[in-house]
Structures are given as structure tokens and as C-alpha cells.
Length: 152
Image (cartoon, rainbow, N blue to C red; front, side):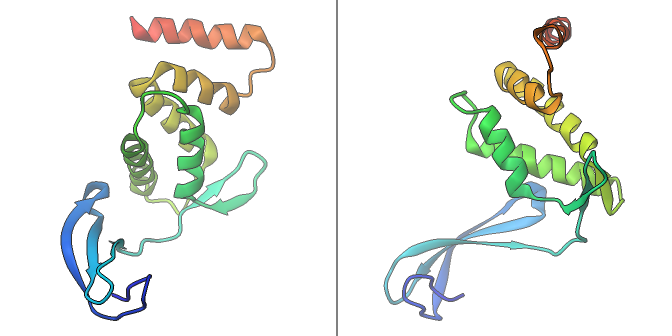
């Protein structure tokens, strides 16, 4: 593996561990020349998962886009980046387990809402308010009532 700092071709692996439920490997490496450390990831190639949007458009599934949405909902909340990455990996695995090349965005949104409900109620409400596009305070209050019912 080439060093991204000095372009040396000789680097050594310091640590390897499985991530994303064993579907990827994270390797911590060190350059033999400049002694800088960096991380690489190995992941087997899977079929391209397509997301069918509400308006019928199709776009490739994006882990980064999903992580960005989760991060926004969890901003200033006690939710770690590791927890968010785990959620993204779990949702992607759920969608791939359906064994369809195309999944509706609604299915992904509902999976996100269910995961957020489990870890942080404020993040859940934030995400739901954007995802469900509350038009007025009444819809928002109905969602809060549903949240209170589910807590019991």
C-alpha cells in the first residue's frame, strides 16, 4: 500500500480489525520511510444498490448521504460518530438483505426513524420533522403523541 504522504510503496500493517459486521476490514498502517500513520479499508464489492425516490427518480445508495442526514439529526446530541456509522452499516445491510437492486427511499427513511427512536428521541423528532415533512404544528404534535405512546 502506497503511503499517501511520501508515496513510498513499503508500509506495514500495525493493526487490522473487522468492521461493519465483518463485511470490511480496517487496517492501521505505518510508512517505513516517513513513519506517518494512516488508515485503509478493504471491502468486498457488492451490487450497486439503487434508491427509488418519491418522484420516481433513481440514484445510487450513498452511505455518505445517509450519514450526513443522521449527523444533522444528531447534532449536539450525545450520539457518537461510531453509533452513526453502525446505524448506516445496519441500514445498508437491511436494504441489501431484501435482495432487490432497487429499494424505495421510504423504506430507508423508516429504517432510519426506527433506529433513531432507539438511541435518541430528540434526534428522532428532528429527523421525522424533515422526513415526514410536517406542514403544521398539528402534524408535529401528532408525532410527539405517537412518541409518548411508544415510550410506554
